[in-house]
Length: 227
Image (tube, rainbow, N blue to C red; front, side, top):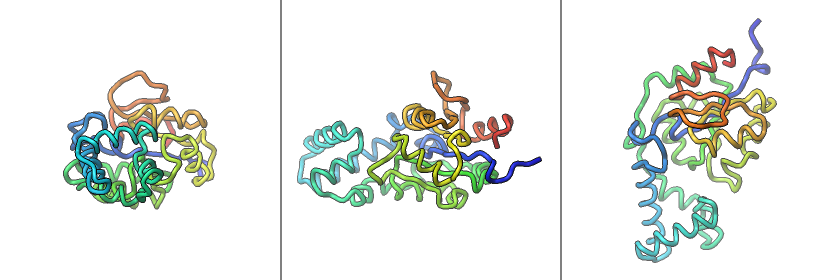
């Protein structure tokens, strides 16, 4: 007997590095990607224009704020300079997905089998997330369950994962978090009882499962009877 929607598992997907590999498949990690380098250059330019700093001082101030606010530069700019976080996002994350995101023609069909049971959770702001999902042709599959990096509480805070479980109205042990980063996608989800799948090259992980890419991850969960 097939499970009802209420009984079925739910799935939280990371975006960058999970639904697609960075730099059109050339980069394994965000830290080493051309995408990150372009983001940083945009941020430095923003600091120069808005704070009147030199490039050298902009780099130093960016590093200071990033360290003090645990990488959340937008929160630091808002707290210390009164610069609206959305202003910062609009002027730094306004990159063209065509430059970094390779379209996988099979991805919409693979994800569509989970429609109604999926959410997207990304640390990126909505301006980038919506642009990327539209470019990949999968935005409608998430039915508006798109959680991005603007609020004060952001990934990897476990409370963000719990909020998604509450929105789904299912217990956390019936939710899978699927992503490429141990610290942000796997560990916080496991702390509240979710099951996890690490996407990417083989490495030490506390995840329940691992797959080389997102399509293989979905196939693995299907074979295990979770889909």
